Length: 186
Image 1 (cartoon, helix red, strand yellow):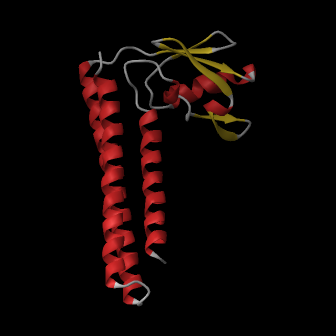
Image 2 (cartoon, helix red, strand yellow; image 1 turned 90 degrees about the vertical axis):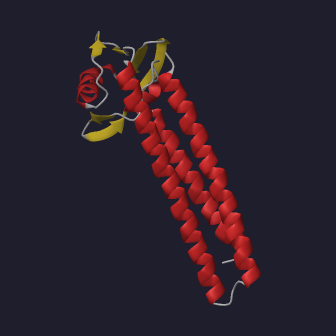
Image 3 (tube, helix red, strand yellow; image 1 turned 120 degrees about the horizontal axis):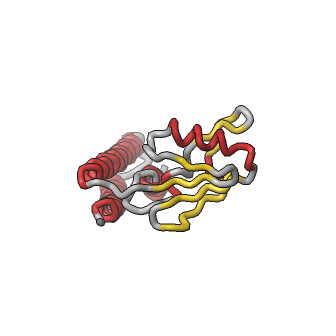
């Protein structure tokens, strides 16, 4: 593998780590209603667990409410059951056509717990990025040991990977800071 290939592969993997973090943070509650809270809830739909976003129209008509309008009204009971068994802690209200979720404001204690969860997820992403850096450096050293890369190429590759690591760690920090600020916002 060349220096460019090693750096490109590392960058792709780092981008996936950041994308995973964003997806994980989407499911964390803030003070406002957000359809991201319920998008990934799996509903038993004709025997197969289906993400809620694939079987219903999700919207937030009010700042503290999520409206779930299923494409097939016969599954409302299954949707209500899935929400109740999820770890959201929200009580669904159904009128037979739509499901409404009222999102109560968070207490200060809940906000702090959620902000700490954001920090944990961000640290996991940073660790994943550092592991990718380690793997890329090992690959470069292996290539240099097999005489495919020169010592200068090895140094160049390690510098590129370190630059990518700093860049993606900064992205993770920005994303986590924004989410924490959103959670702590009253």
